[in-house]
Length: 149
Image 1: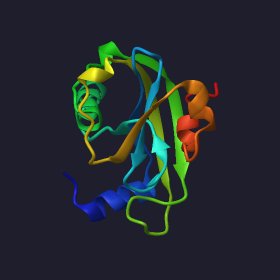
Image 2: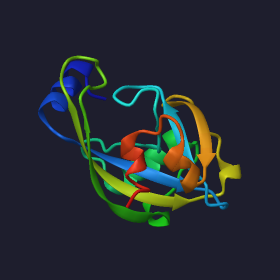
Image 3: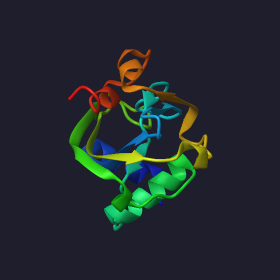
Image 4: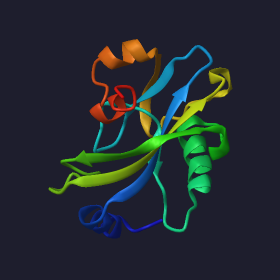
């Protein structure tokens, strides 16, 4: 793991590459988690996270699904939905610089009864239909983008 001061320098000077996973259950509802950390702290967001140095997209997908969903899934189980850019005025440190993500979006349909959702990244979870999600309070705009296209 990178020392935090080096990670802050990376955030300040380069875009980060990440994976967002739009998770659907068998009823067609979407999983959202209430973020614990900046830059989207307190907002409802889809699961996801950064790809680490020397980590393949496939390995990152497995790690992220295990860390964010409590169960490991393979990238081959998901459908690629596109590349997105997320810009934030702030960053994880709270210091005065922005964060830029290049995001690879994936759609994953799962049996939600198999999940034991962890609380490290999200304090709460909710399953919503797409219609409800679009009007639900405090859903982050970057999450809304996956449904407004």
